[in-house]
Length: 254
Ligand code: 13P
Image (cartoon, rainbow, N blue to C red; front, side, top):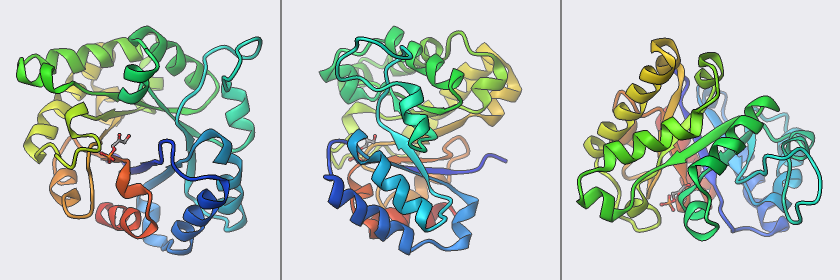
C-alpha cells in the first residue's frame, strides 16, 4: 500500500512572518490520524528555515520541501541553492520541473533530470512535476507527452531510487484556473505515468512510486480524485495557502 501524500506548493506567496503564521496554523490543527499521510509544506526558499523551526518546535511529523534546487554542489552560480543547503535546514523534499519553472525559467527535461539526480544523490525526495498544455491536450497527444517527460526526468536512477520518488501530474490547463481535471481524466494520465515507470524500472518501482494530482485541487473536489486507484494524493497551490482548506485536504486522505 502506498502512503498518500498531500504537498502544499506555496509558490511565491508568504513572507517570512506570514509563512510562520501559516505553518503554525497547520501544525496547531495536527491530529495523530494525519500520520497515515505524508504532509509536506513547500514555502519559498527564504522561508524554509522558519517553517522548519516551527514544525521542529512542535515535534511535528510534517515535512518541509523546497520549490526548486540547482544540481551543482557549490560554486559560482549566483542566486541558486544547492541540495546540501536545503538538507542542512531540514528540507527533505523538493518540487522539480513545475510547469511555471518550465515556462518562465526555461527549464528543460534535461535540467529537470539533473536536479532529480542531484536530489536523490543527496538523500532528498524529488516531487517531479509533469503535465501538458491545453494545446497538447486538444491535439490528443497528452499521454505521449507526459510519459516522455516522466521517462526523461527519471533517467539514470535505479529502480529502488525511483520507488522513493514522487511524480505529480499537473495539467497546465488546470493550474490556478479553477478548472480541475475530472477524476477520470486525471486517473487516465496517472495510470499512464505508472505504466511508464513499470516499463522503465519494473513492476515493483511502479507499484511503489507515488503519483499525485495537482491543478485546482480543493476540499470540494478532492474526494473523487483521490478515490482513483493511481492517484496517491495531491500537490496543492491555492488551497494550500489557508490552513483550514489545506487541513481539509489532508483529512480527505486519512
Ligand atoms: P493550484 O492548486 O493553485 O491550481 O496550483 C496547482 C499547482 O501548480 C501546484 O504545484
